[in-house]
Length: 174
Image 1 (cartoon, rainbow, N blue to C red):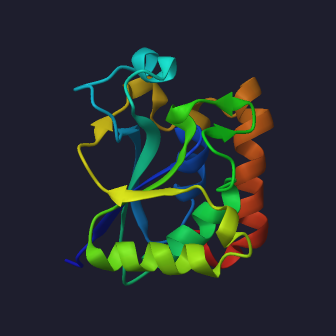
Image 2: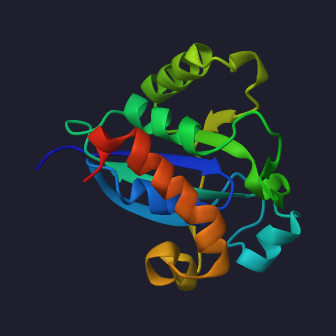
């Protein structure tokens, strides 16, 4: 069996990132959840209040022989705005911050290199910190876009990110 890697990313609402990375070749699983806060077993409602310190994140398990961490970060930075502090579109609050929770020194090095290569590197507010405890989000958040493609938020926020991925990253699509 091939070894796998894990990374955890925050870039606004986890529904958006999950929908994009579910379509990426080499990605084995994507789970929506919470990371980076100080409350044990936070609920969605508590995270939304912005008092737990957690970010909405996706934990991505991938096969590095099929997709690199750098490739994942390239897509990540293309489908969210890493220059807006604690906000993605109309979603505002620390729970929507841009974040990379790295799992190894190699991931840290790659994250820094990818950020430094961005045209807007001097404006990037993406938090780059070691991974801590991941709390899986409630079941109704998992595969949200796949189960609710016609919902208003999915139509106006999630779908454009999926379409952007399909348009600009066809080589990474499953």
